[in-house]
Image 1 (cartoon, rainbow, N blue to C red):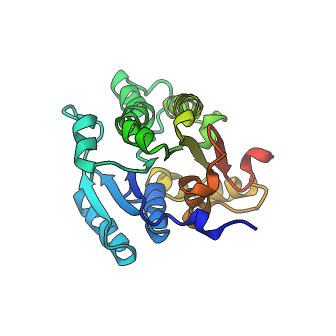
Image 2: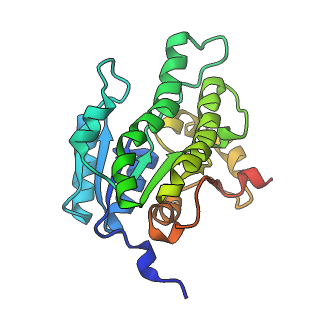
Length: 252
């Protein structure tokens, strides 16, 4: 029989970027519910305050830090020292500008690749030394259907998320020997701030649902189980994996 305590996060500290809304928000709340002390990063102080208030109903130890991960004066090492040692990192901050190839500029390309691909590595690396000393840690990246599928107006975003899939494998190869497991969640279509414009088009939304094996698009709570699993001791022998939570979209 599986040990139910394997999924208990009591006594663990987690950092969730982009944790004030969307996928990061539901994962932050899920980890807090499982017992973790969660710190969330977000750019919007008003949204961050609301998110922290919601988490504190679950776990009074949860906190928030207003921070722009791609501001010109960003110093991830200083940020890491402010956060302190953590056991779990969820790299959920991201951007999808939905530009065609002709619309992409050098600046928009750099913004997309920085927040989606560069920050997850460099921020995670700031915390690895402490995880290595404890011989245990969890890093969860957020991949995408576009990690393996090309979609319209997704050239820069797809390049970044394809990179996240390989980054996850490479980080796992580098750090798993020290007890630091690295995996990625690849969500299907969920209604989040990044997909809001798509979900305003019912015909497209219905078409996407029909392309899944289950027959519907995702609800954010569908991500809760995999988040706790990958953050907990239950996933001790799983690393370097990109796990699609897409209702079977990629199976068809």
